Image (cartoon, rainbow, N blue to C red; front, side):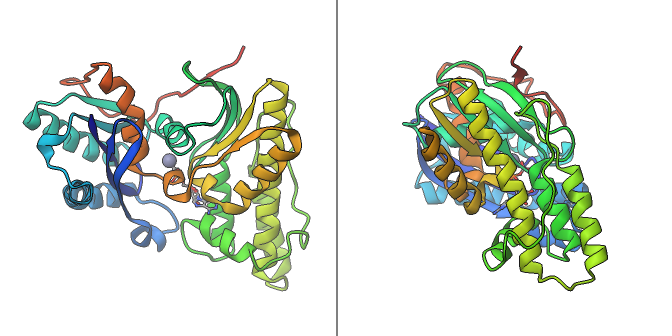
Length: 334
Ligand code: KG4
Ligand code: ZN
């Protein structure tokens, strides 16, 4: 079955065609990063309007690149929660219109379920159970993932997400939005030991806290007055984030008897993080699964992959499919 995936939860308009739940025939992503850069973050109303302009051209391009017609589509999967409500509604409305017109089943997908599906899509042979770090702009959580059951939460951030910390610190360093890729680029030239930024210790080693690090960077930048090279600050900041993410993911895997560690979500696009996790996993005798960059940041192939299972089981959310700004994801392990 061919599944059309649609993703518009934040500032990426994306459409993809997936065959048999595992072959990505196309995965078109139109980023709005340039549009929001001057505001230092996503402006929800502007994001919705841009999605309205782009959603159909992006879908047509995905069909073109996959070499298939709308009639060949067996089902539609769309991110319907959580996210910016106006942005979500654009994708959901497009999916419902196509679902009605083509008389095809159409299902809503939780955005984080999509990020987990990206991992399964990219690393189908990774062994379970695994400790998976899901780190994006709005979310940082360690999950206990099995081959079939629902993911269980081992711990999440108490305050800022790792991506948010990258973005806000990048702003303090006068770098454009989104800051993560800029920090990574600069960090390649910098000394990660130049500035000793703090790592928050937590009672539950599967939890995180990044607000103190953000404050430490703000204080450092104000006191330093530009004396330290930006590349050194970026490298030290990245080191502080990567250090905590990698060590807690490996610790969680070992204490929960996992066979593998994994990362997914926008922050997983950071190749320094992926390389460090691979090295730490190898030292601990664990398999390591890290998706390629294109499947880490928001994209519709992951949404199609998440929806595929339900669609192939005959599920259909029509006609009541709706969008929701927030919804919990994994339940906590007792
Ligand atoms: O998953 P995603 O694309 O959107 C959300 O669901 O939030 O994640 C976006 C986040 C942003 O905070 C962005 O700065 C971060 O992922 N990010 C990175 C990198 N690429 C994207 N963070 C660090 N290094 C990167 N290379
Ligand atoms: Zn995301």
